Length: 103
Length: 327
Image (cartoon, rainbow over all chains, first blue to last red; front, top):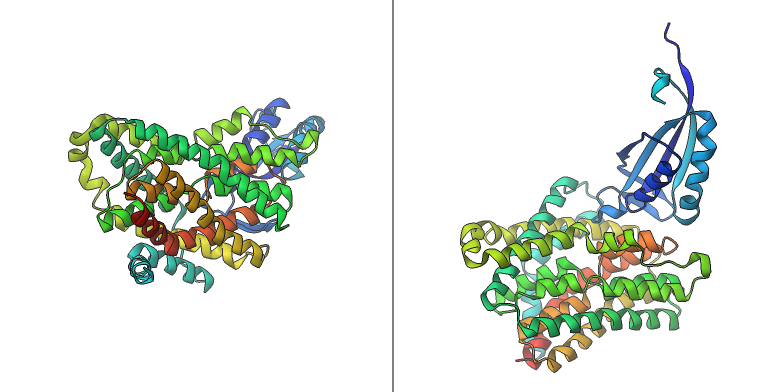
């Protein structure tokens, strides 16, 4: 039977314009891997938004990264200044990974 | 005189470019599922920037870089400083917006819309009116000053820690945004390659231009229409501002064009640039530097109110004024 290892997955919804700030914060917390995926449409503080905005900067993306429980606080603290200044949505979920050496 | 304006406006409103924009708006308002695929729309933008930049560069190569270019560029910078200051004053004194959102809106109105400029050059070309190719470079130059003024105005209403500076990455975003890089790059390529370059790719940058612009305008209409559907924050006062501010800016530009003795074509383009409001470069800068300001106000006002006004009625009006008072 495959052994699974508990980890924390952090999902961050952010506009393209602010994404470099999030990446810097993750780098500051020594996060080595993440994935960014585009979002299609949604509704939030500023009403409806859609991926077909004219400017790239307005497009919404989701950045996802998986980390160990003991480094979660470091990552969230590093993200705090970004969260305080820009409107981003951060959520944390318990996940299990197959290859523990990768995360 | 009225008859002349109506004839010009009628011809402009019946042009495929304006009608495709109207189709996009109508489809969005009717909540049709018509969409222009994102990657395709991006391709259209790339083509338009390449073509307009290249043609401008070729035109400048014919006459070389003149003192006129430098004086018009300087006039453009002055307009980029004056217009946001006026817009901010109007919006705050009439209490239409709080100082922070007023600063963000002011930055948009001081900067320029490249698409409005492209529509203006197309109108002038169809009327057989000559204009200086260096106006492409002036367009790129006029994008930035208003952003600096807007941030300065915003800082005046913010407390210490909330204040924002013109950081390195903000500068990067503004100076190296895709539209500006391609527009200026194509302009330089056109300038270097000159007439032989035009002979080589003229069929590509010239013949399909209007058709591609129609497709792009359809997409712009859809985007503007969708903004209107969700425009809950636009008060009648703000809409009035979005219609009157371009006229005020155009009058300022006309005064400068008269002082500089510009030709009717070049003067019209300076008026168009002054009257247009940004919805690509400035929103990106505001997202980074002024996240407290609300894009549902500044993008909607610029894209869904001022852009359609300029496209339909503003362009012929500016040309009419310039053709009667310049040259």
